[in-house]
Structures are given as C-alpha cells and as structure tokens.
Image 1 (cartoon, rainbow, N blue to C red):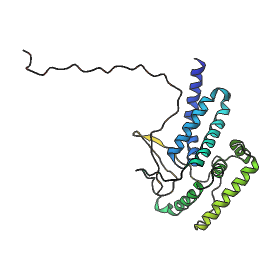
Image 2: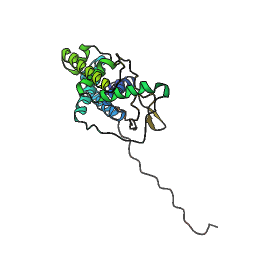
Image 3: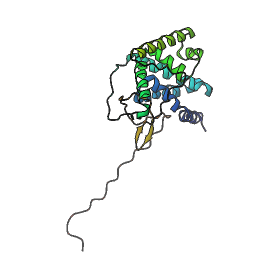
Image 4: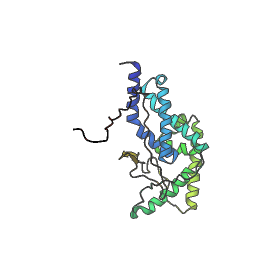
Length: 235
C-alpha cells in the first residue's frame, strides 16, 4: 500500500469516527444544520490538506476542532442575521414539556445573539466540557480572557433571561440536551429530537462528505438503440 493510500484510509477512518461529534459542535456554534455542515466541510478539508504535517493521530482532532471554531468565528462576524425560511419545521414540544421548551427557546435566542467569541467560549466550556486552559489554547487567547468572556456571556444571559421572566438557572456543563446529528433517510437529511426553539425553521440538504480526491472513471459513449423501420411487416 502506498503512503498516499494509507493516509487516505486514515483520514476516512477519522471522518467516520469523529465527524458526528464535530458536526454537533458546529451546530452549536452556527445555529443551524446547513451552516454547520458547511463549517464541518471546511474544517475537514483543511485537516486533510494538513494531514502530513500533523504527524501523530492525536493531533488531528484538536486541529480540526480549532479550524472549526476559527471558521465559525470568522463566519459569525460576517453573517447577516436573517431568517432562512424553508418548508421543513422542527417537531413541536409535547404539552408536558412546553414550559421547559419555551425557556430553552428564550435562552437559545439570546445565546445566538452573543458576540462570536463569547459564544465560542460557552460552547467549548459548557458543551465540550473543556477547562479554561484548554479553551484558551483552542481559541489562542489567554485563560484570563476565557474567564472574563465566560463571565460576561453568562452575565448577559442572566440579565436578558430575567428581563423575559425566565427564572430557571443557566445549564451546567452538558446539562442541555445534545443536538441530534442529521441522519440520511430516503435521500434527505432529517433530524430527530432537535433541541431547537419552537417555530424556528431549519434547512435540510444532502450531506456532502469529505473524502480524498478520487480518480474519475473514463467517460463512456451512450449506446443508441437500433432504429426499427416502420412499415409493412416482413414476409
């Protein structure tokens, strides 16, 4: 087996094993599955291009996650915060969980409104369960900045939630429901058990997996059927 083939096999194994977790992180950073898939595509593409110089497999996922966060932060600064209407709606909350769902809706709205760095810090600290030092290394900022950004973000959330009459405490690390990764079913991407705000719409799209470049197959000429003459039947 050539070195290139071995590298491609390792990359495919990494994508199979870790892309779902990376996609969930991308969703929390981006706020919708379509953009999350774009972010993941970019992160995996850059990871593949850097595979040789990354060396040990242990360095691959931290690199991919860092590219993911950096790309999301850059995108978030440029993004126009408009709605993305589509024909697909998330499932509504069951009546018994309506109050809890409404509180999550309000919190989600305000988390999405946070500045890019504050949102990234919250995702890494409370969803990825990273320490301040790990978060600082991932975002390439100081631990003191992580602490201050976390404090400001949580303070802003508490203030805005209180203004809307939401009295529940902010979730601890990984206490919130983990978003489900879209699954391909009948040719479309669907989501199950999404912890999304009621009424928010998401876009479904065909997944675009990242794979190593493939050699195109030779183009074949189409075979035309023989023309059948129309006339009197042969004798």
